[in-house]
Length: 489
Ligand code: G3P
Image 1 (cartoon, rainbow, N blue to C red):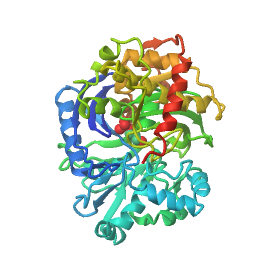
Image 2 (image 1 turned 30 degrees about the vertical axis):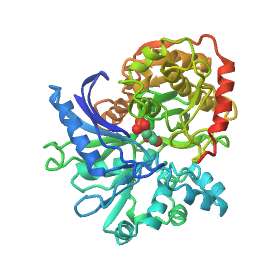
Image 3 (image 1 turned 90 degrees about the vertical axis):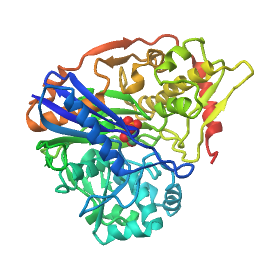
Image 4 (image 1 turned 90 degrees about the horizontal axis):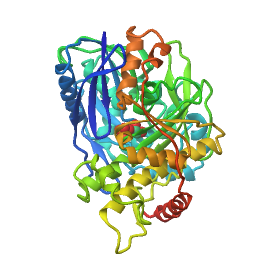
């Protein structure tokens, strides 16, 4: 038996066929367009995401002799999507999690004194990152689309909901608890949509999807809509929670970092939510069919891999992301250059939507190698910033960090990460852990695997990076540069 897993990420869609022993048998990948209509704004066309899903799945299916027994879905979280109930067309582009346009909504709600209550109910904070603030913005600025929502002609959801609607030919409007817990509309401890929050953000509850557990039958694909396939959709989760699952971080204290467009450190905290006053988010990791919720504490860093992408596409300093290791390796250090990649503001633990990218310490001797190296170092510092909150204020132990995602393949970065954390970093054989986690959830839901213990046995270590010398002076320089990046916009 095998599982088809779809990972609809921020910059592209990956589809994989996963075997019963947790191997990836084949894969497909399709990028889609990023729209930047104004500085600070990031949009995706839902139809382009859907077409990328179809293309990636076609490639994965064509590359394998296995016939999947079920489908799992994982997705970029928080992004706000609107679509018509009747024809599933989107009346406007989706507002992406990186988009900062709702900063004013957040300021207004904060000044009105709502933040403590919002944080208490959701485990999150008032930041444009989260779906609810984007929906408020839409209600106030896109009268035509919002009229469709309030009249019931259109619905709202995150990317998982939209894809399930498309895959089921409009039969299902569902999401899961992990995605719901990123919207600012979900009551973290009651485990459902909150009327109080829907009212605060001005979102009609009837427009929101039904919340289903992370594994179990969420719907069936309609062969007319989805590549002629009639399969159960039996697992879904937001991409970071899926990666936590894919890393088999099933026990409290297990922690992973996924190095993608951004980097996200999640630690499993068990069945009790752990609150942070210091910039970490409390979130649902997953919910079982019996209703039991496992929670996580999360450090969400917005721009890491995207900074490497900017070196490639914005500056033309490198041709491929992979090249960063070789280029950075030509210099022993960054030559005093510090790059704070606050290209879409700063997330955890600083939470400053007005921070902007800042490069300090450039001299006449600075070369592209220094800048490339400073970019990799910045990723390691950003991760250290959030792990320090976990082990400091939050009082949790992080004896080892499991790494995954695109940039986890970069040995120089992984070694520097271990050095900066003074903690070993373990990289598994399968680094596409997000898709793997979606496959695991779907396979559990459809009976391909019977228990998490069985899944744990499929996890294989590829390489362990032991911490070496920790450059504390460099980390102090980073802290100073972050202060300069803050409040810029
Ligand atoms: O919260 C945003 C996150 O889900 C995006 O993940 O992998 O697309 O950068 P990624």
